[in-house]
Image (cartoon, rainbow, N blue to C red):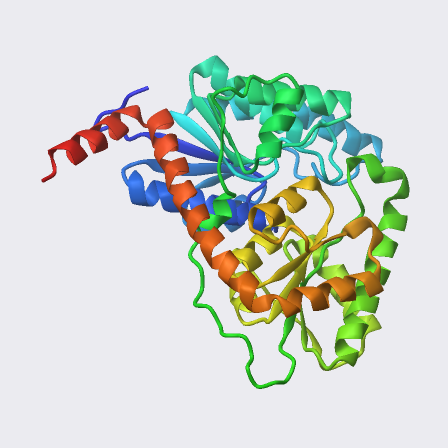
Length: 414
């Protein structure tokens, strides 16, 4: 599709945005930053989970992703079940109409091709399939940019994810194993590239020097309402209790050492975990932060000596600020991220938190703090360069005329 001065290029952004997940919104922020810097002429709007929040924060028009407002509530009564079923049908036409109004649609990052957390096939996988199928039907290019993927066992979910990826006009991934997973699920990935997570393109707050007073410095603890993955539904409560009990014991050990502990979340659903820890560990050393964005999280982490975190984008925030971090890992993507950034030795299974072992790893991490901060400085520079290549590739794929003009200008510049 082409456009004239009278008809600007229309770009849609799509996903569970504005729904309380700071990582998802951070990915959107990075893509909007790219569009505003490189393609300020485009007109952008969103089809997303929380349209009011997206419009308020990012200043773009937004439409609700689902016709049925109770989409993510369990439907038990006949009326609710019927309404949810009707919503699936209505969303076919709503999604198609929205896609048709755009020249291209960008799905900014997020784990849209994975099921590492509990996920029903007729939830977001179905919505993504409607998007990509509509794009192919109407000639609107759909770009899955820097997304996460994982091999999926559930057959309906796997089929929807596989077809979504096949129908997309552009795909890139946030790690090599995501690309490998899509290849294993039958997607031709020969032309797909791997880049760092989009959140690495966000501004980084000024670094805070570690405390040199001799007294122990603050520790940021990123928590999560963790109940296992899609294949763990039968023992979800057992997994959650084990995670929470181990985390509480770890916090108590830090407090006994006189360490201030700052509790952080990455999603609205994590708040009960914060409340449970504050209730169990009654100490003025343990406080909770009110973070509304990845920038807020990074400011907290930049002021810490060390971070321990579960959520993927909490780990990224710590890594971006150059703060040594220990990952409570719930999926292979966390292990891959830590290895990529030079901290592969500092992971601990979120499903089986052993407070004694975790404390041992934590102390070993702190002993190498100065060395690891230097490593993170180098790895962050490399990540920033790779993301410049990502955005250049995205321009070439989605804005070929603009990319040609940029190249011509570079050739004519003295």
